Image (tube, rainbow, N blue to C red; front, top):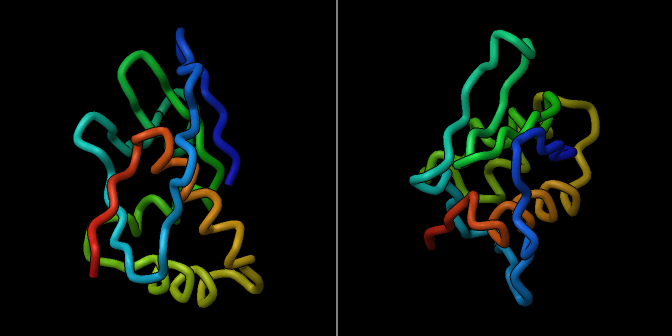
Length: 109
């Protein structure tokens, strides 16, 4: 679930204090962010203006479920069926970091 920026610039304010996600939140990609497959890197990447973020497999799987329909709890459950062990708190921390960077938006269930 690591985020590895490879773009030309990085945002210095990468977190907003007090940002959290709850089990009932329905995360979705922000309008200015795209999840796509990079042929050159042979993996999923997150495209943000002037930044390319290379995702590992788990991070890509999480973001594919961030469609505004699935709740955080449903995302954690789905990942639990795909993988042997998924630390719930790590998934929530990953989503919280992306919300703090304004790469994800959350809606209430």
